[in-house]
Structure formats: structure tokens, C-alpha cells
Image (cartoon, rainbow, N blue to C red; front, side, top):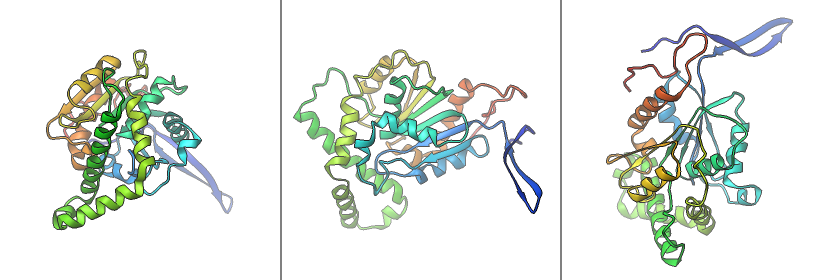
Length: 285
């Protein structure tokens, strides 16, 4: 196990009975903000955050498109604006943004909007990307709706984990149907809107090192979609693997954390006092 070096900073001061108290935290740890996808919540990041250990200050944000929420947030701002609101919650300078699915596409729009804050790196897990040549017609709508239903069902199974194997298929189908009924058309349309606009945003001038991780069989990002995103976003590295799924951060957190760590090792700045990087070279997760 790596031992943290001794650069610490005060994070809070107070007094009790006239006696001063202060709290300190390692200053060398960069801040990582984690943004979940549609109908998910901040807790889905726990496996990855645990995998990073003490190398980052991790902040998992509960976004307005969380599970069980409504879609009134659409009238309160764009997905990119909600990303900015989320980052404003974090009391430290943000070094790394990690986002999944709809959260990842929201970050793409945030990057294209010319954000005022600077970050060192971005990691996008299972974003979705529309080919510019693909017409936005009813056939695309129907395919996207079918993919949405399949993905929501897969998300339910991923979150249930081993419990899903012990449930009768009919019970799982009923649970998935109830979840889809509760999400309703607004949930799908919020995702579909980001999908159809994904090929229209200008990412060519983005200079933030970006890693895209996903499954080679994920219909939202695989094949020509990944190639198109790579062309549209020259700063991005695309890493798709056969054994990763749309919910890779839940089902394969160990592997995803390893891929992210390798990427950040190459792109995060070293601590100015010690010359050390938050992800040590030669680390194996």
C-alpha cells in the first residue's frame, strides 16, 4: 500500500470553551467529482471511490435526474448548466470530473459551452453519440426508445447484483416495467434530447484531456459512434472493451478504476512540493 506523504492543510477551525480547535487534511489529494446518469444516484460511485482509496477527495453529486426524482429540472436549466451548479457545490478546486451515461453527455455539453472553471482531466463512462449522418426520424425514435428500455432493465439488474439471479424472471420483468412506468416519457425525452444533439456540439477546441470508457457492445457508443466521437473530440482517448457494459462502474469497478488510474497518471500534474503524482507509477489495482 502506498503511504501518503506529509503535506497537509487546515480545512476547518473552531473553538470550544475558548480553546482553539482545527482540522487538517492531506493537501496533496486532488479533487474528483463524480456525476451519475439518468435514474441513478450518488451511491453508485461507492465501489469506484473505494478503489481510489486516499488518492483523491471524491465528491459524488446527487443530480436532479436522480432515481425517484421528477423532471422539473428541465425548466430550471440545461443539463450543462446543472453540471456547473453541481461543481459549484464542491468546496475545493476540481481536478477531475468523472461522469456516467447521461451525466457524461451533460459534461460533453458543459465542455462545449466553454466553462469558466478549469479542470485537469475528464473521464466519461458509457456516453452516447449520434452519427451526424443518421436522420432524426421516427425510426430513430423507436430504436432509441427500445434501447432505453433495455438499458434501464440492465441498470436494474446491475444495481441488484447477485440478488437479481435469485429472483424469478417474471418478478424482474415486473420491477422493470414499474420503473419504466414511473420514469415516463419525460425521462426518456430528456435522454433522447441529449442523444440527438450529441453530434451537433462543437468539441474540436476542447483541450481538456478526456478518457472515454465503455463496452464494445454498448449500442450508444460502440463501433462507428466511438470513431465519430473521436473525430469530433480530438482531445479524447476512446477505450472500449468486450467485458465492459453500459454500467461498467457498477459491474466492473476494479477494471474501470484501473483504466482511469492509468489515464490520470499521464495527465494529472505532479504535486508542486513533492513532485509526486496522485496516481503512483506502477500501481496495480
